[in-house]
Length: 102
Image (cartoon, rainbow, N blue to C red; front, side, top):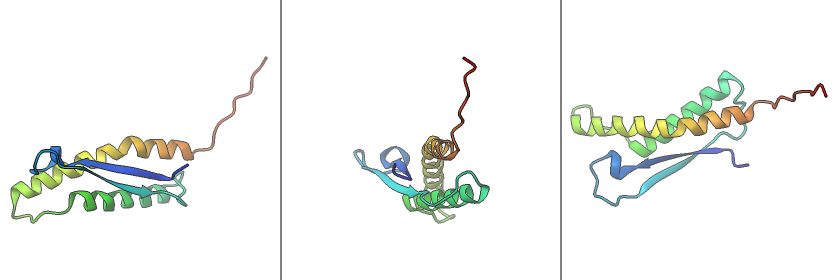
């Protein structure tokens, strides 16, 4: 199983770019991380934050429009990763077996 989360950002809907702009994606690996631990989850969240910055960039605080576009991109991109993050964490938990009384 691939151990990565794919971050996607539809730049046409997030920023002031021409219609038809392509979606950007970046895989974020969680291979080797113990997602059952707070440390492993923190490392993955830092990796996600770095990927979000790579997709959305940073803006000069003096440019309000660029700051707003970057902020919106960051929120939408991070939100797009949340379901994948939850699945990765859930999948890393040991499976439970329930005994039948029959």
